[in-house]
Structure formats: C-alpha cells, structure tokens
Image 1 (cartoon, one colour):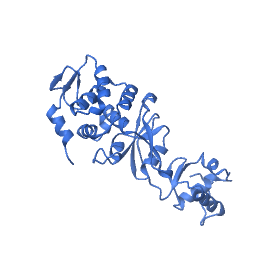
Image 2 (cartoon, one colour):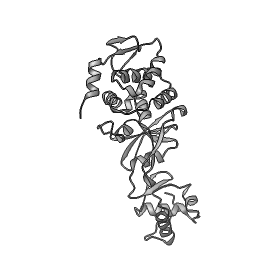
Image 3 (cartoon, helix red, strand yellow):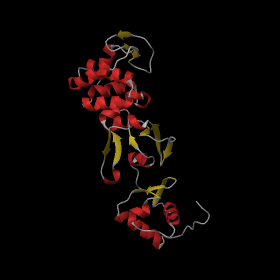
Image 4 (cartoon, one colour):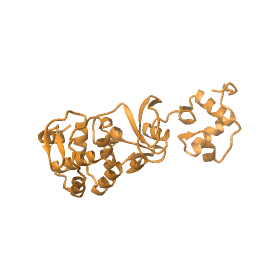
Length: 266
C-alpha cells in the first residue's frame, strides 16, 4: 500500500458510493483498470477507495489490481479471471463432469499465457501453458457472476491424455474415457489441434477395445494416423507387454487389466 493512501476509520461517502455501485451492477469480481468503465464513472482516488474497502474486509484482493467481494469465493471463476485466454481443464474439468470421484487439492487452469502456480484466497492453482493452436473446445459453465470457461468433455479427455500427469491418475483417465459420451467429430478436430499421434493412437485403441460404437468414425481416423513407432499404452509406466501391430502400441497394461479398469464400480 502506498504511503499516501489514507485509511479512514469509517466508510466515507465515496466508499459507500462504490459499494452501492457494486450492488447496482451486480459486480462480484473486477480489475482495477476496468471498473470505472463498467460503472461509467470516474473516482477521484480509486486506489484509496479500494485500499479502504480491503482493510474494512468489504473487498478481498485476489492479486495486484484484481479484487472481489469479500464473500465471493468461486474458485473456478477466480482461477480463470486472473489469466487471459484460460479455461478450467484437466483433473478439475474431469471432476466437474462427474468423470472421476478423485478430488484434487488444486484447481487446474489451462491458458495460452505463462503464469506461475500460486495460492489465491486459500485455493491452490496450477496454470498449464499451451500453444494457441491447442486452445479449442472451450465452452462456458455457470450463470451470471459464476460463469467461467471450461474445456468441453471431448477436449478434457484429449487434454488429459496429452498431459496425463494432470489427470489425477491414468487408471481414472482410462475409466473416464470408457464411460464418456463423446462426439467423434469433435474428437477428430481436437486431436488434429493437439497434433500428438501417440495420444490419438491410445484413445483410438481404447475406444475400440471398449466397443464404443458411437466413436467408429474417430476410431477409423485414429488408426489412419498411426506411424511406424511403437508407443506404450501408459506413458508413465515401463516399456513392456504385448505388441499390437495394427495400432503400433505396446500394452504395458494388459487388455484384461484395461477392461477391469473400465468396468470398475465406485
């Protein structure tokens, strides 16, 4: 806080006016640089108003220049507010779609911008930077002040296969694929955007193994993408197991084990 900022003992008229405008415009979260435009009003000393409201616990400072109402704690909205071109993704999205019952103590946010992981208002955030070409399959979830961007189900599954260390466990991811209702055209589109032959083969093989007939178009696409290199089905485990020449995959998790994972009941 700057030395010149005056902290009043009571709420001043300007501070009260600011609170009333937050209520009138139903603003729960905002950026210092944008709020006057939102209100169509200039304040003589906005920094002083905000510092006073933070001290009086009417506002909370999320990070430099970003604020929310003191009782606003929607971790998904906050996580996507603090970095541009972002979306809730990976393990967090799997959980929100009911595709895993494993809870992370971290909110996973995908973004095209570099941002360090941090704890905000008691919540841990992991910011995963991706190439702009991979920013597809983003939809909105929630309503009004609780609206936030999230990867759709198809993109969530593909992202987790692309970076399984953020999926909450490979077995959970395999089961999520087995129980998901997926659009084959979206799967093809997103795999093209990710441009990772190994994950396309893995997903295609698993969809075939699990007899997901609705994904036949995607399975046909996936098998056409195979190259001559053998990839292991679980990239986080040892290079061993049965070779599947039709998919150029090596099963370091056996077919029976994969089916057992898919059929697991919580």
